Image (tube, rainbow, N blue to C red):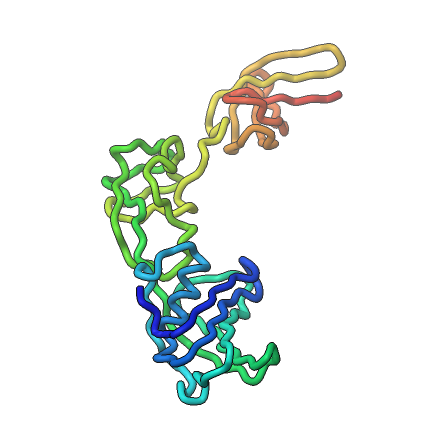
Length: 236
């Protein structure tokens, strides 16, 4: 993209608070390219992927004056897309002269993973379940998957309907133990180890403590997930 500014110097201070870009300019032609480049850099996108719709802005003749440096800053704790307000800060010789709010909506064109067919809850995703589509999004790009490979081996947390975008909250790493599984329960006390069968009442990753019921006694207890379908009750 060709910039409307005669001279552009872009600098990112921090990935969170105080994000900004500096532009030293000779002749300015609008706020949109300035905000577009700012948003693009926060999310490591190409300028062409970002669209900015200005909703409210100050008088450009008051903001863009020769010899000044503009700093675009955010008062949010993290960069984002969607409806928002950023601040245009004008500096002269390193001294803040004035600040103006600019309200706009930012969207990004992303290629993301979409369900190619209905994916049932607790189903482990396979390549045939997913396809890539290019869409306009206006929320956190990190919620989406940019590669089918990133989804392989993950499990659907809930039903994902055909055509729905697959987001990070819709999938998970499969737990070592799932609710309702028949599990081996190892009870350790001193040098004694007793193995028996039981049933899990919760999902659990390795290291999680979950509730289980011992099949032989009907006793409920807390056990630590050791590996797939194995939990340990350690009285030591």
